[in-house]
Amino acid sequence: MYTNILDDSLNYCIGHKGLVVHAYVYMTSHLHLIVSSTGEELQNIVRDFKKFTSKQIITGIKEHPESRREWLLNKFSYAVKRTGRGKHYKVWKDGFHPVLLDTIKKIEQ
Image (cartoon, rainbow, N blue to C red; front, top):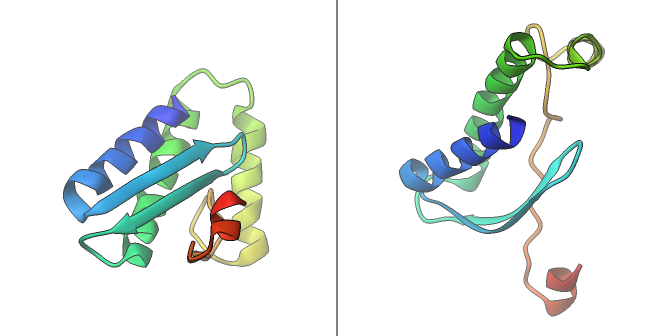
């Protein structure tokens, strides 16, 4: 279910915001993207992606059978209290840390 939320949001950004996805991998606690943009600024696309997917993930946790429901909601709620950012739940870490892949060494990493 959560990967579908990420897939749908990435596809929306591709279709409507000019996002170009060169490669991606979903990990259990985060994701890695190799992306560029032919439309909006990349930082704005990432901001919107994180905002939208946060809301969808929290809704998914609340509405679907999830064995880790209480643990996840507590973790995301604690993140708001710890950082002072957000209203009720914080799914993603703050910031956007792009790395320019301008050498073969960086690409291989």
